[in-house]
Image (cartoon, rainbow, N blue to C red; front, side, top):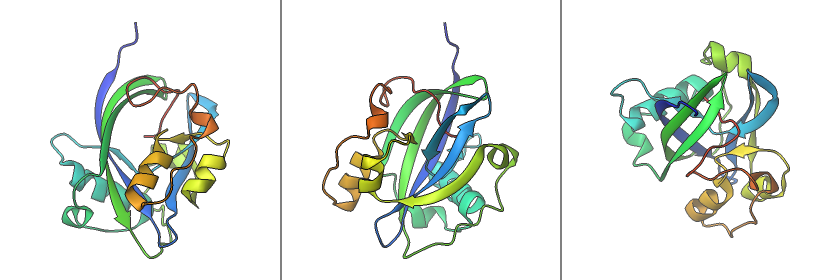
Length: 175
């Protein structure tokens, strides 16, 4: 029986003027071959409101400093189960949409885990994600972006097949 560590997180869908979303490339230190793309964000401190945590994580991971009020309300939420560095997590997470004309990502605020497990970043269009063989989280990202940005739905990513949705375990996910 898998024992899950409960975790709360806030994540940011950082989207530029070209409707491209920022994703980080990373891997699970316990399974370096397991590589994937993920949104900025991470675990919340005890009693930290999601918008405050999302603003903190966004500043640490991208250099973009916004107030929690500037993030507005969450646009999506889910619960996932995943392993990372030998620990299984059950994570409740909320996503915030932030639109920027453009942004030069500054990762100087990465913590030790991020420095060791994040290998790069890229701005992706929904169409590029849908056509890619790369693994990304959340697995519903193309549909979420299509709904939020008003772009036509793209077919599901081939990498999402066989990976559980928000209701079940996935084969690894970001911090």
